[in-house]
Amino acid sequence: MLKRRQFLQVSAVAAVGALYPISLLGQGRPRNPLRIPDLLDGERLDGIRQYALEAGQGRSRFLPGLETPTLGFNGSYLGPTLRLRNDEEVRIGVHNRLDETITVHWHGLHLPAIADGGPHQEITADGRWDARFRVNQNASTCWYHSHQIHKTGEQVYRGLAGMILLEDAQSRALELPDEYGVDDIPLIIQDRRFHSDGSLRYVENQRDIMMGHHGDTMLVNGTFDPVFVPVTRRVRFRVLNASNARNYRIAFSDGRRFHQLACDGGFLAEPLAVTDVTLAAGERCEIVAEFSDGAPVDLVSLPLPDDSPLRSRGMMGGMMGAIANQGFHLLAIEPQSQLTATPELPPVLASVPDPASFAVDRVRRFELDMRMGMMGGGRGRGRRGGMGGDRFSINGRSMDMGIINERVPLDSTEIWEIHNNSPMMHPFHIHHGQFRILDRDGRAPGPHERAFKDTVIVAGGETVRVVMRFENYADPVTPYMYHCHILEHEDNGMMGQFVVE
Ligand SMILES: [Cu+2]
Image 1 (cartoon, rainbow, N blue to C red):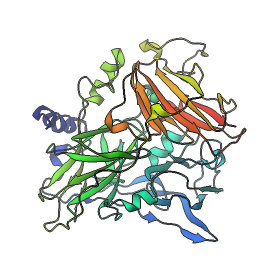
Image 2: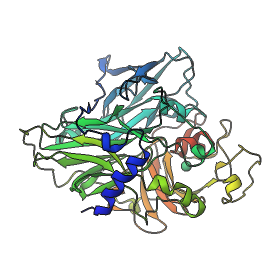
Image 3: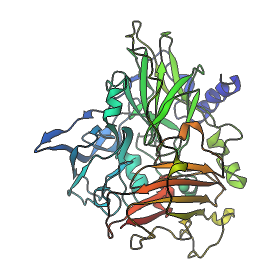
Image 4: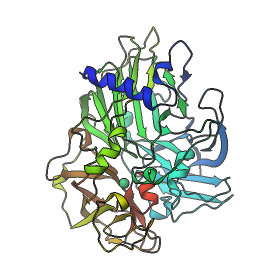
């Protein structure tokens, strides 16, 4: 059970930090029904399942009485949920109706580099781009978002993101809640900052870059102060941290237990009973919660524990402590009076191979650095100097579109040893596919992350080893990316490129 102190922190801190004090939320006035993004199933044409996305500008109503200029796919904010099926050929056509260049990256998908939607697959203003690939991986919850060089943070912040549900034979065979929008619910969690006229505030000072841009107002699926009404006893939530920088510690306000089914890249071996789950930027999880008692409850984000490895160290820890201490209400849940029965969770979800059994061809090391400027810290390792220069780097280099940093042989298995030289955590994301976590500073990963992942938390000072198979798609010219998923860090250089050849 959660400690009483934690609940007090949730309400106290949220009241201070939020644009609309938490005490006013949901008290005697209607909340906003949780928006459910449209489900895009595609249309089969000549054996290819075709999807169409159109990026455009819009105006969104988030806050009472205010309009916010936003970006979206097929709508004013965020995009439809794409449902993909394993082994199907797909074509996703993207039309960029904006007056700026974007890209659309399929985060978590294993596909050819040319279809990845990274910074090299630019879609200029009014341009079109087709991603063609064969779906080739386990059932999972992935997402798509802009990956435009130096602009990813801003474009995602304004709305260029959406969810992807990947099905396979295994996921269809399991008796899990899977009726989209009814008992299988996407939760795209984002924090935003607003001007008094309703427009979005983005990166206002160097701190927003250094710590990553954090907001004081929560949106779930682009809904402010949302309420969800369960009609079934069990509900599966697919939780995506689509925030630019913020870590969440997701829990229920009454401390109830729930089950985690999956992390980024697919199912855990069996459902894991937990009372909270932590998600860094870019990470996903699937959870199932019970509402049989019919009692209303809130989904919240709790302050990080005092000893959390996600807390920054040293001077950075002092600066970021206020953020780590924040708690937020995310979603009010008010079950309908009559709830439809749903089957018990299956005891076994998937067969998940032991990462220690992988035959490894090579170990590569990646060192993450952020230079603190006037604040001190970091280590000088051959970077170019100057304010606003290479403050964020991997192996001493900031992202350079013209440099391939690593060349990985096709059909090889590698350990990537990621060492964080900086005092704050970074969620490290690798394109091309899914990996397993071998260990953290030599210790086994937690039970919640013993499945396929594409984004891994690397705490300040920590060394995390992941093992990944590089296969199926060789292209000596077009690179995949690896980077920090705090988007302001990515945009400012904590990113590198590799080819599989
Ligand atoms: Cu970072």
